[in-house]
Length: 105
Length: 455
Image (cartoon, rainbow over all chains, first blue to last red; front, side, top):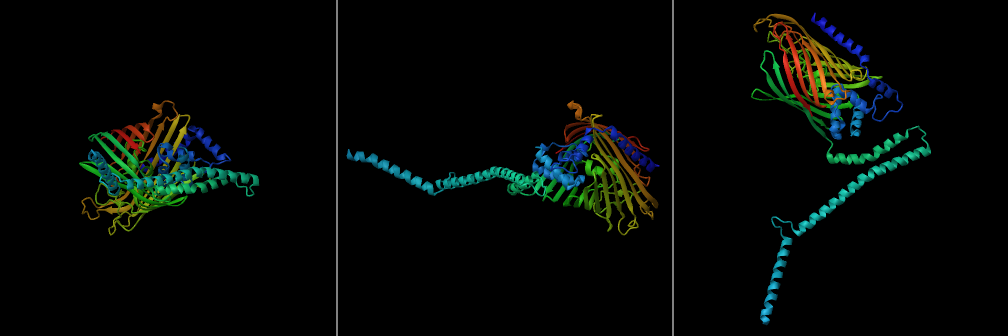
């Protein structure tokens, strides 16, 4: 009985998430599509996303993003390395994010 | 008269001789407090030499970028005038030249500063809790995280938890892991690490990240592993336009509780030393169909019984599903976060206290438990009023089933409504009210207040 209730709860959550997705859609989704279809891709990009977008997408998944000026270059190296281990991002994403954070200052 | 005229001359000569001898003596000997002329000259020479070296370094640094840009221009113009048979982009050639020229400068800077990078980070928090049926109390903790990037591939991270307790201070080692980046898609780790299947512990536990003052019960009380001691391999990779990630590990695993009727059949994930030769195997796979959405499945299988007892072959399996959604919405003028995880644990049939020597057996039992949480948060990040933009509203539901023996903790379900005010991206003041319903017992409703800062 308890298990059935748990399954139903999980199912409802998944349904709510998928149903609400289009409703909540903002311009960011369009922006992503535009970037992916763009023919020119900057050196700090990965899968069509710029370093800034990767930084925003990956960091915001768990917590507020901290401004690039908050840490020095060497500190960002360490922080993004640590976050790569925690968030399972790829090496290319790590490099693109670090490059963006250093250049944004 | 003639004699009288000679006196002043003789006195002046004697005075001059005395002064000269004093000056000569001063040049050769060092007084306790003053620098001699010789030492002064030596120091001056050294200072001038250092100035020259500094000027040379400054000159080199200013010349390098100029040289780099002029060479880049030269390559670019050559490429454009001669054509590019292989179709290589001119900007790519520029980048090659740029990296080649800047390398010596960065290397010299690196050698001056050293190659190891260290960062002390972490968080601190203070909290007030008034819970029905318990005395109200303040609490605090300081959680430093030590990060060392020994090389670009080799990394060490460790976290301590320091908190006042009773008449003293508790210091706990939360994790300590050495990691090696094998390639862009794979990392090896060894040591004490956060269990990958427990998404809350691995990602949301720091109190400047956790949006509510307390933590979900389902993920800490024996349903999900939280810390593992062992080795793991993990990483992420693209699949077409989508992404996936994985983490698999081998660890000491949990310990099966067998000595107490209340906890019989439950798993103790806080025992970090092993109790048998069997090792737990676990992991999590995650899938990100679009940015901002991740679904995951985690598991851990183990033999948690003590070696040499009747429980040594008892098998335990923990499984979990999780969902993380982050979405910026123009319609709602803000950001929505949805985090959810639910876990089920199953321990094979066993008879606890079979001969009755512990006073509660024989107790035959197939131990099953489940628990989890769902949290929805909204922050109006797109509203123009600063005060409102820094507010965040949170609702969480969490649940934990009763202890499998039926003699221990009963089923517990909580609903928590919270309001946060963000002073900075990593500094927050939280207030929450928690409706805590324990089956068959008076409620444990609570008022929770907390200030947390990540640094």
